[in-house]
Image (cartoon, rainbow, N blue to C red):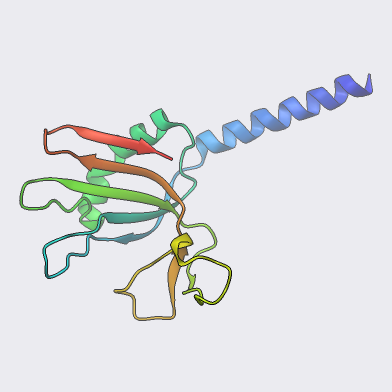
Length: 145
């Protein structure tokens, strides 16, 4: 009887978690447009989000449903002269932090720092969730991590 009760409680908790994941809307915490250097090379647009879907088909559906709103509000994706673009969606996690000291064990590859921010707390853990690329052949490429 106790095993049955424990199994029922575990099943209800799992179903509750799945429903919560499905119903919680994605929050865009920050948006950073592409940064281009003098050489003409550009980094991708970056969206920092919370509650991003786990499943790739839900991630694509979210992007397709919201790309117009994101374009209107943040100007992302920003297309280059050929109409190509690259959008990286990263987890906001615990928010911004200071740049790690290179003498520490933490690798600087584990964080991404926004050089355009003029504050000490300008880095975020590098947790890429999803990328969208408009490719030279005219197609869209979605990558989930």
